[in-house]
Image 1 (cartoon, rainbow, N blue to C red):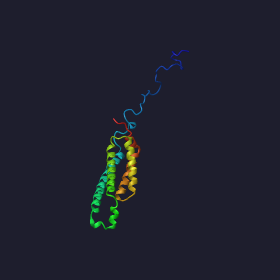
Image 2: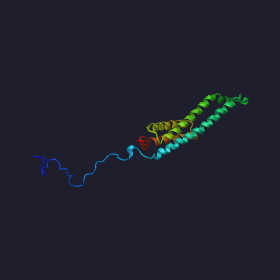
Image 3: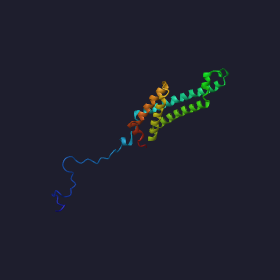
Image 4: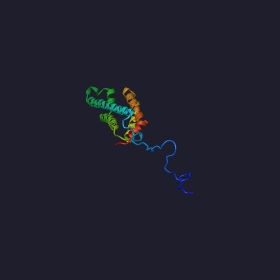
Amino acid sequence: MSFGDPNNPYGQPQGQPGYGYPQAPPVQPYAGGGYPTGPQEMPGGVKAARVMLFVIGGFQVIGAIFAAMAAIGLNEAKNDPALKDDLQFQQVADMSVGAVWFITLLILGWGVLAIVLGAKFGSGGNGIRITALVFGVITAVLGIYPFIIVGLVHTVLAILIAVFVGKSDGAAWFNRQRA
């Protein structure tokens, strides 16, 4: 038997496509776009988380202003002779003015972190996503403690930030290829 015989059923194929439909061109996975390179526009949940970070940052700046005013007021009130005999005031005055300024700096620093995280959402990678997720969880836990109106707002916003950043479309956004 020779393979050159065109009627040999066991011979080499002759390059004929066969019967039926013509063969399709080979499929190239994810050519020209799609999710493996990541979305090209920021998903709505990620945009919302970004806005919530800016809102928390604004609240923190306002809180830092109030804390600074409290530190200044406490320092001025310590020198007031009328309050030297006030027992309730002395309990408040026992807290060092330096400690109040330290708390003010912590409040301000947390707000700056929120604003920087929100600003990095457009260009940041997976590290920004993880930092925002941890920020949301810690803020939610810290917002539960006082549980006043501001604490409730912080808690709700922080939980939403963690959820929106942790979803799969958030992961796709932060893991996308950048040009």
